[in-house]
Length: 326
Image (cartoon, rainbow, N blue to C red; front, top):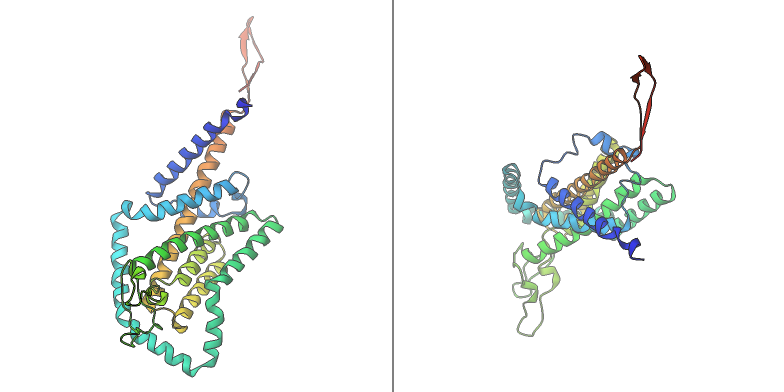
């Protein structure tokens, strides 16, 4: 029995080394653009690059680790981009209140907007789960490995996005636009910071969740995370890319027209979701590339070879064949 278990430590060690290489590669400029046409072809998604149940969870954990630690390995170029995002966000923050007021006024004038916006916004929550489930089922029924893989990656982006934006909500503690402070009877884009949710009033009651869960927009983050996965995996099909980002953008706008979020919440949610989706896709392709290389290396290493080896004997050339076993 122990002979059957003997390969397990070596398999675990090999997987550990594989993910270590993935972490190392994640700190370099992504190579997906360089060979994107090859890496997103349907033939690329096969048994070697397949996401099994154990690999799914290992990739998920690796994704989350890279997302949390990536700022510590950021190159100067990324910090320049971050500074630009902060500057733009600062400008939008100044417009949060007037944008929110205009959205509310628009809702009062248009019953069509109210009914449409209410329906669209659900696709950034529960309906997104149903959509992913439907796409995954389609891929499974019709044995389309690419759709299955892409949908699994989208669920990974969905899960890690939820973890990240919930942490951001906890740290920021921002008030939602439709929340009115009972003490001042006013609504404002106030920031309460971390641990506010544990605060108690004179009666021992904790604050309403709407008073600290605005930033960033969770619906927008989830929508852009999944949209980015499909847009990157089907970058050779412009209609998919345009459709995915358009749907995510409309969902983000619906959070403003529904008066659930400030405009800056939606902006950062979209950026955050896009970055998470990119990381998930790039990390999978690093994994798939290393797996394919390892399989090709092992195949060549263990392949039996046949070669011709003519010899000169007795004053003439004699044919010879050498077959090498590995």
